[in-house]
Length: 110
Image (cartoon, rainbow, N blue to C red; front, side, top):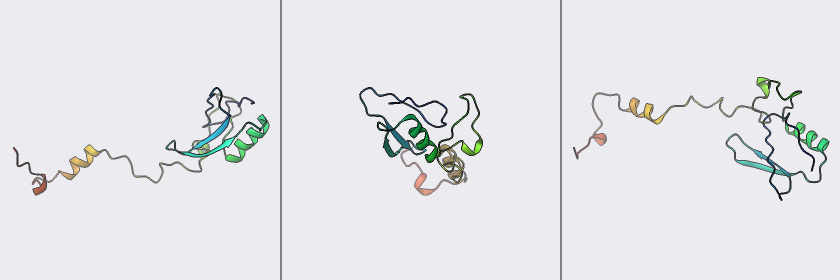
């Protein structure tokens, strides 16, 4: 099995002794999307596949990744359409901001 180079952005190679080499594609939440067997492929075929899948390949390992390729091979950031993070503590503070407690929030055991 040919060794993959480390120039592809968002690509991590893990050597697992005894396992057949495969490319495991994950989404932003590390959920498995697909597995592609690599044992019968040459290095150039694997690099071509990575390009077809949309992995960004740097010229040099220390090169910066352009912003438009930051999440590649995903097409978009998973975070751009989500509202900003709101902690449950902030939510509780806002919900209990009125001066009068709600009837269901009163503690009868105190």
